[in-house]
Image 1 (cartoon, rainbow, N blue to C red):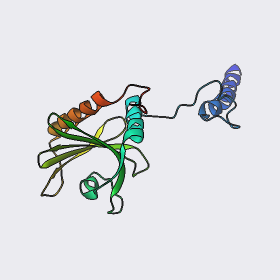
Image 2: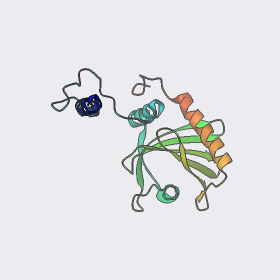
Image 3: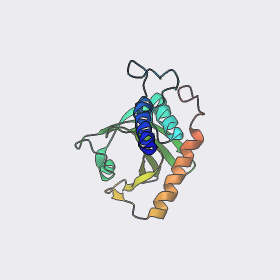
Image 4: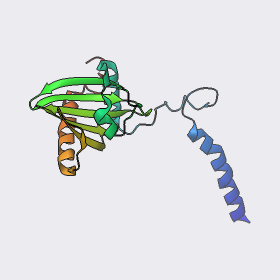
Length: 173
């Protein structure tokens, strides 16, 4: 008899507490918003900082679809809108682009070394998804050498992490 009461009380307690935990935005439907600040779900703080930095300081550009189509970023054969920053590094020109073609933020890192472009696609948690090699007078191809692709991707990430502003300075730097 007491086990049934205990189970019933646990069920009723969960029925009261679970909807409160599901509330996230302040308003009429969330009377507990003053108790906890709203914070959207993100995969990485550093990724969010990079998104803000590119959003405020990046230039609006249109990317050619050739290599990006191999990465799965398609816009019906048209150019792909992005926010982009570029800087010269010790071993070539580095470019980072913020693409939002699939309604989620994704980064495309590029590095130009003489007549070769190496591109990497990653998410906001900086997990490499695809890598492409694009010679100036040729067609883009997917990089199948995982070790080389990961090494180059980490080099490009380190370049941009060194230049990314501190926590509160994404808009000002």
